[in-house]
Image 1 (cartoon, helix red, strand yellow):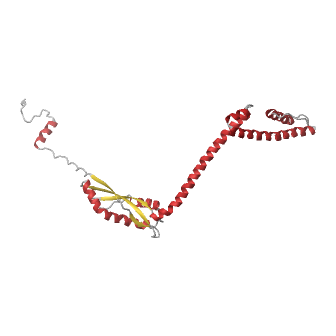
Image 2 (cartoon, rainbow, N blue to C red):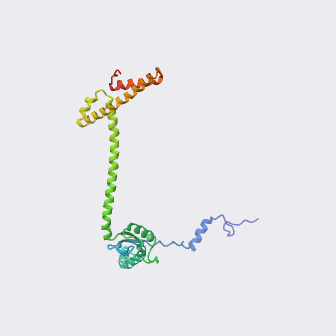
Image 3 (tube, rainbow, N blue to C red):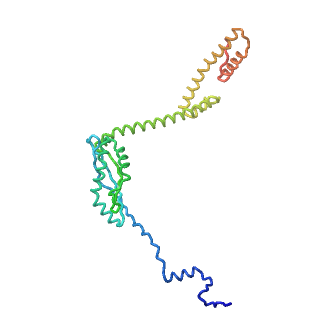
Length: 270
């Protein structure tokens, strides 16, 4: 039986696979993993146009004034270059906006600027020009105002409407305050009337309040004798019919005596 020496090339003693891989890579290095190129930075520029575009309103007698704001975007260029390109392309951009707006403007009456503004922004807000994304592109936002002559004619209408709305709000405030004041004074007068010293205490609050309270008490006292007379007639009537001291007549008599005691009315012989 023969044995092979440790140096025999046919015998392997568990050489780690990772070590073999590293050795192989030193001779034939792996190809680098491709890295996706970074997206070019996007430059934006807001361009507020100082002069409005004019488009005819319904009837062609008046014009709407379109106040335009352009939002330019581009890649592979600096902000200064984009700004210069936007200034150069401004007449072209204005022509596109006017072309899109003129037909829609003719469907709106001259004093409906707000309705036209909403319709135009809904139409243009998701559009961009030109279609080629490699070129500077713009989107647009609009503010619409009516013709100056229309504004003058609308002013009296809005002045009157504002006045009516303000007067209406003022009357509602007055009504709420009057209701609150009435409730509060009603509670005060009711509590004062039940107090035997109120006739004198009312004078301490001022002449105007004392006069109002005096009239209030007199009116209340004028009503009571009429009610007492009705009660007396009811009790007397039942006695004349010979009904006797029934529960019904006793209840009326109790009520009559309570009113007489409360208001200081002495029963007079009849």
